[in-house]
Length: 470
Image 1 (spheres, one colour):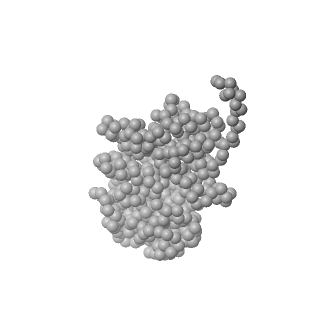
Image 2 (cartoon, rainbow, N blue to C red):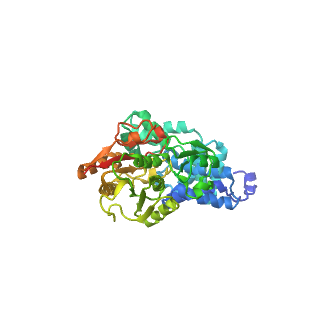
Image 3 (cartoon, rainbow, N blue to C red):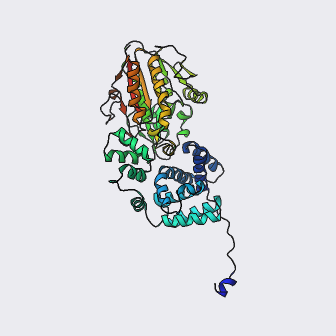
């Protein structure tokens, strides 16, 4: 070192600047990682608090939302890229450091934020939340990442498709390998279909409203906010980007709600299934949190029928009560276990069981779920799903109809469950559900129905309709 350099005074310490947008995004990611929270539940109160404190405007909220959801959706791809830029296994890097790196990687590779701004903002965040020492590590890794764009990185870190198609798709489209395999099986093969589906899983879903019949109309909702017509449900409207459903009067009052169009179609198909004899008593056997129950209750009220909404968990039963409050027709909400029901066999004309499942059909809305689920989780759901469908068939009268629904396309939660229960119980037959979804294309060979994000713009809802025959 020269004499002049030795005499030069050290640079004064600069306190790191807090960036409220990136701080909030980091806080949300930590909650998802540490508490197994869901971003769609964590983010709204954080945004509301930031607005009330005067820290955020609409553009800040949009950027924070993009940073959180974009990072979660592409986490698998970013992990592979980060792994190529560090000299140790990722499991040896502290989780908070990985969150800062993933946020930085998304800004570099998944947004239009300039490179220098993405790196400097991420390093400043690291200085605030990690300290100067680890901020230097973050700086070094992000500078390596910034040397290539996303396409070039994917070509480097993903195995060739011809050598390992499932692992290639897993890295390119940021899904666990076992999920790629399961979705591919459900689609029935073909590269184009699985790539389209995985891409759709990584797109931001539209917010879809439902005008509950007899309580609201699509015209009322369209007058209240900027919307597009629903694709398939006569009660659906799609909100323009950035719209606030909670600001709509009909939604505040419970006369309308937020409900994916696939969920609406399941309720409508059950309600419109042909029936011989009375049509006075309906059951939603897994009613929480209440979206399908509210639509069914409104449809039942128009026909003079009554809905019993049953939910095992008391706190979810309270959500159902809130969703049904003000329904014009008769209804009742109870907390009960659908596998040990309090009602007598043959009590109902129509029964819906939207069973607990892996949630692989809603990865657009809950991207973090793909990293939490394991193949063995399905073994835990299997007895419950079979038990609920078996009891639903007992609950319906001869000639009545049961709808078995899941928000998962996994064959182990859909057709295999239905086939097993039909073989074991007897006295029931499948009803072709496709005519009950008029205008909806690409519904397969039937008689059951599988909806898809890339084909229908809905969650991947599954529906089988069964009629009790004896």
